[in-house]
Each structure stands twice: as C-alpha cells, then as structure tokens.
Image 1 (tube, rainbow, N blue to C red):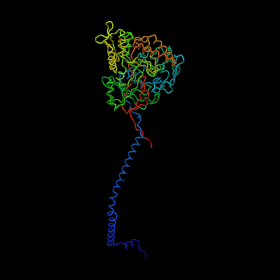
Image 2 (cartoon, helix red, strand yellow; image 1 turned 90 degrees about the horizontal axis):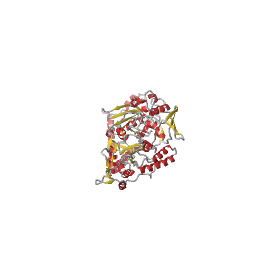
Image 3 (tube, rainbow, N blue to C red; image 1 turned 180 degrees about the vertical axis):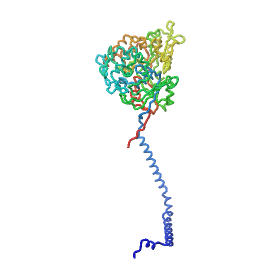
Image 4 (cartoon, rainbow, N blue to C red; image 1 turned 135 degrees about the horizontal axis):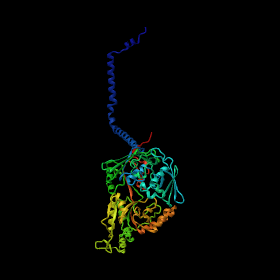
Length: 595
C-alpha cells in the first residue's frame, strides 16, 4: 500500500533528544574551529599589523590624490567668460541735459549720445576709421568731393530703414544757423546731397584731405523730427528722451536720483536692431554726477561697476585689490597757451624761456607717469610727427640767460623787471579735474626764473571758460586741453585766421610761414607731401613757442574686477571706449566642458 507524503514525514521526524544531541555536537566543533583559526592566529595578526596599516594609509592617500586630481582637472577645463545678459552700470562726470548728438557737449552727454546714436564712421581699437553706418566711402582726386554709401542693414530701433534722407536731414539741421549747433561753423560751407537712398555726396569749398574724420558723427531720424522747427530743436523733448535711436542701446528713461539734481541716471536697453549686432548686455545705465567726488563714492558703494576719468586725488584713494585700473592715451593735448600779443609775451625770448623752464618730467610724475610728455603740436604716431623734432630740454640756466639777454633783470627779491615793469603773468585755468594741480606746478616752476603771477590769475568754472575767458582772451597764459584728433590737421588751433573771438587759436599766434604750411598740408592728398609740410610746421612752431606742451592726457577707467569692458588702447575721443560695447559684460560665468 502506498503511503501519503505527509505520513512519510511524520515517520522520519526526529525526537527532541536527538536534536539536542546534534546541537551539542555542533557547539563543540565550532569552539574547536574558533580556537584553532582565530585565537591561535591572533599573534600572527599582530605581526602583520604594520603592513595592514601601511596598506590602509596607501588606500587613503590614493583616494585623496584622486579627489585632488578631479578638482584640478575641473579648474583646467573650466573657464571664466563674460556672462551674457545683465545691466552694466558706469559713472561719468558732468551734467546730462541733451542727448542729441549734434548738441551733446559734456562728457556725460557725449557718452550717452554715443551709446544711443550710431556714427557714419567711427574709430576702431587701432585708431583707424571704420564704417559704422557707412559701408564704404572715397574722396575724388580733387580732394573736394567725398562720396559715402550706407550699409543695407542700417535701420532705426523702430525698424524703419536708416537712409541717405536721414543723413541729409541731419546735416541740413547742422547747417541751419537757427538750430544753434556748435558744429555750424565747420559745416556751413559744405554742400550735402542725396544721390539715392543709400548714397550721400559732400562737396567741399576747398580740398581737405582729413575730411573723413569729420564724419564721426551721430545721425538723427528724419521721420521722428521732420515736424520740429530748427529753432525749437534744442528744447524738443526728443533731446532728453529720444524715442528712436540707432546705436547699440535704446532709450528707456532719464531720472534725477536726488532732489538737488546732482545725480542723473540714463537707463538704456539693448538695441536688437543695431547695425553691428545686438549687445550681449540686456541694458546699460549711465550715472552722471555733477560732483567728481561722487564718482568714487558710487564706485566704493557699488552703485556703479565702473567710473571714467577720476582725478589724481581720487585715483590715489581707489582700492586696487577690488578694482582694475587702465589708462588709455587720448589724442588730446594739454598746453599752456601763451598769448603772443600780450605785453609780457610778445617777445619770443620770453616764451622760449618759459618753454625751457617747464619741467616735463615733474608734470608727468604728478600723474604717476600714466600720461605722456607733449613735445609739440603733433602726437606720436600721427602723420608728420618726427621724434627728433622736439622742444629744448628743461634747463633753468639757459632760461635765465634768455631772460637776462632780453633785458629782464632780477631785483633783490629775485623777481624780474624791465624798465621798472615786473614780469608778471595772468595765468588762468579750469577749477575742476586735474587743472588746479597742474597749474600750481607750472607756476612753481616758472617762479624759479623770476616770473610773478598777477592777482587776477584764477581758476574758473568749465561752463564759464568759453564766454568769460576764451572769447575775450582774458589771460596771458591759459592752461587748457584741446582735441587734436587722429589726423595732424591742427589748422583750427594755429592758423592766423582762427584768432577771432570764436576761433580756437588760443595763443593768437600769427605766422605767415605756419599759415602756408597748414594751408598746403590740409589740401594735399599725397601722404608724403603732407608729412613734409607738417615737419616744417612743427619746426617753426617750436621756434616761435606760441604754447608750451604740458602732457598728453589719458582716460583712466576704473572697474569692478567681475565686469568686462574695452581693452585699453589709444583713444581719439573718450567716447571711443564704446567701440566694442556690444561685447561688454556685467559679470562672469563659468564655462565647463560638455560631456
């Protein structure tokens, strides 16, 4: 009979006594094995302990090295790059009342205008003319007809095409005396004609080789301003709030930050329609301060990320651990203009003595050697500049000899007189910026050769210098900065025709020889001929000493170390720092390799 599985299991089930016996047997075997393989071998473990610890230390070291290598590799294969987006904040000095490019005058206005309105031509990082709105341009072989063609992708921020009609409209406004543009005198005799929608022709009264440099100028939108009378343009709301622009940014708002209106902010947004390409930034804020001391305060408090053109005293107070400082030489010159028809300075020997008594090295040291000596009417790198044509070296002994020979003798006090008249000069400069420091240095140097200074010598406000000082020529010596430019045509500063009330021949310098060299040089298209003429001009200028070159200034730019701005280089104008503003960044981003 076949039994069920369950019944079979029941038959083989062990008894409790059997199970206990097996358990005791297992316990005895386990104890023997533990004694044999663990207790008896503890001594062996003690012997190999040092080796075990060594291996453990090696494992830990290898782990640490692997972690370090991972971190180093990450640093090697990641890069800090300018971050896209964000708003860049910059502080500048000056009032900001007019953003129109044909009126902008102060550093703040010129900066804002440059960001909002594209120029026909502009200067690149090498100081060469390049097209911004212009595609190409050329002068004919007479030197009188200049033709310019606009880029086909030039548009206004509202999408309207920017055409030759806008160019014609802009220059017709400038040429209209009712507009009261400071550019009127330069353009009144130039004919401007529209050839087609993209082409403009300029016809000059005489040949002018450097004419292209005159076209570094913003253009106005005809469709936004056609109904405005020229006489009313200066007060037109567009000038403070331009609704249509063509530059890298568009206007958003301009507001006074404080009740005293000493601090204005111009807020701008990236112009996606900009002819050279949209900026990486989302926006730009330009902070304009009437008080220079507020510039560095704003930088330290992080109200702005960068400031432009601080004074010598402010530069010394800047923490270089927090901020980066660069210096870009400007195509400008600071001169002591000697009024050649004044009683004291009509004698060329006196002017030459002042020239020799000027310690150029001491002046550049005032700026911690961040500026360059100015050795004549032209700048290094310009056509016609020659390094071996320079003024006499600083020499007090020779300066004294010149004055002695000219009849200016020293009295008991050390001051010089001639026929009972003291050698006393009225020296005038501007009351802000670095002018007071430089003026005092010049006075200290010239006093060493017995020169005295009239009680009417003074420092005046920048807003008053044109009307109260320059126009009436109310000085013997004027310490002042002029824009020389990239081309050596300095006709406006040294030609005798510019000695009028509104002219900029600030020395009232008249020399038939110099007039001839300047007239001929600006009319010649051949660079070699122009260069020869400017060599002769410079030699005569240094002989006649109508001014003493003091220094070539630099634009000092101070920025937070996280932002990205222009690379320092020679600038024709301070606003040229915005040439590559479309690549600026308000911060940094970490770029890691993709897997």
